[in-house]
Length: 268
Length: 254
Image 1 (tube, rainbow over the protein chains, first blue to last red):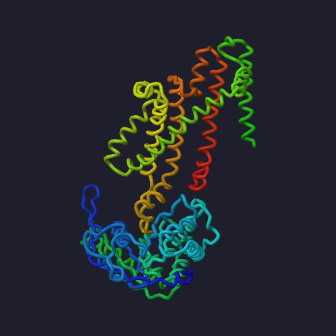
Image 2 (image 1 turned 60 degrees about the vertical axis):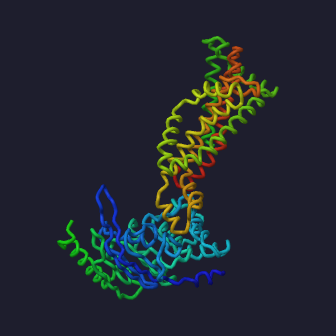
């Protein structure tokens, strides 16, 4: 299989979350993290989940990833129920979660080596392709501590995309970065998504970030975690985080978010 | 270069001070031989092969016992970290026995195994095993769970996760545990060789012991030098390269 063939096989998947509930025990108390959450994500759609901390949006992401199991409800990719973690759904974590005992290139190779059907050279070609895509072509042999925060997230993105997943799950990947680096990554992520269209579920508490990246923004409320409202963002791409149109959408979402927080039925 | 020079100067000064104390005749030469006397003793045993033979005997015992300790300690440490009941039993046992000075094993070893190589080996293994178990356990326990989660999403399972994620992630701990295990093995072997006379091999510890019996202080101090030297060499040759590599990779060097 050549690099071109490998890249061509990339059907993005339709994601169906149905009636998912999940409770935790925290400090002897039962916390309902998610309650009856239903969410459909189309093939190649970029969906952002927004909500206050503790609204269960990261829990939902972990359930879709297969790292946690729901108490009730199902998650399906293209009609197939998920059972545990799988290569078709890759996760990008907030703290990058790159392996510090490997250099950048070997980190990207980690997932590729576990993917069957590729020769050694093809895996290397794929890794080179993705490192170039995220702009790290000159940092193959760098150790992780030599990279800046933004570069680490780029490497994590390359690692997550390299096995060619059908769904990409991103858990506040840019939360720990400075504003300037973040803006740069918004641009890059949109460019990369145009080139390698994946179904993306992106968790964030940054409303503006959600409006900038998402085709759709899904608003969560807290305790129990529930979907409150959805917003379509029909702005053309690439979008600039500082544009006035975008600010309009962000304000609308923010107002809705605050409204739900103040609503008596969700008072804590 | 500057560091080498500083070190060389320090040790040269130490030797000169020793020689001056010797010349001042504060203690009898029987109790404090001169550096030259010790040097000529070492030169003599090197020439007639006594030193090489004892070092060989000692190193054989050390390496064998150390390897057994590692081979048992690494997997036991991992199991201890992974399973709560093992942690509550073997983990506590390891913690307790690690605190036991290894010289305390000698009476038991003598009664169980007699004046034999087995007694030596037993003492070295007991010196190594517990600290390797404890270091491996804490290494594995300190692995950030996010690494395992990330690996699982990429399709890593059981054995692959252990070999490719948990092992390398805990390597800094494991290497320092191996280093500590080596130091304990070395101490316990010297104690064993001084206390236990056996006919199957005449090690460094025994050489030291007979130096005392013969009132040959140049021999006592000479052998002590050799023991210190071997310890330093092991550190510089066996462990320093590993540690340097890990520090570079993980970015923990100063």
